[in-house]
Image (cartoon, rainbow, N blue to C red):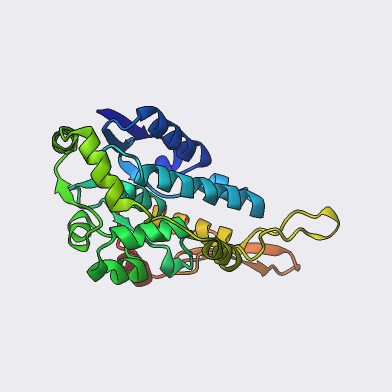
Length: 294
């Protein structure tokens, strides 16, 4: 069995480098059973904020293309993939988990998993949305997607986001070893039959995604000015920022966080003042995002 450990800054945030690394390692594994996990105390906390912040429209298109290729490579990998979700798996991290054949999550009560895109205004890329439709059970799909909560291991098990809650990595590896004992050709054939066509996306769907999510895509500024950053970028930043730092202010975040506002001083100079939310508002915000207060 091959162990792949996602290791990256920002709680194993999904950067182009990390996603490309995963795609390459899957190609090299050639159908051998894979045990996928994250370094440290997180599986993956979502997208890499520093990289996303620097993207223009063309860069965002390439970034989302890499994300979709990673989803396809994981989902259609012929051998068994067992995900050991050893900590937070938020937004893109949850998507990585959903691509895996078997998803085992730590029993640590503060660990969270979920798809919090919709409440923050983010549209799923086409293949990623097809994955969500296929992997999240029909009877819980609307709650998982439309509520957009971040769930504890036990709640995630009830919702069908994961298959089992286990105490630690040893138990997860023992489970993976049992799955890996299946005859490879039979496993690959059955998996292909179950998943063939699931992620297929037509040209009209691709075009609709570009027009709806990236309205500024391809619109160059006048006289060689930089391309306008698509609206989806600020949404992605807000999504990941809220998920990882629930008690700190984030750019563009007005949902209960402390934030800094500018005002004019007595001599007309701009000064900065901090407006801090009440403890009741902070508690309400933390509860709504399903992240336990420290």
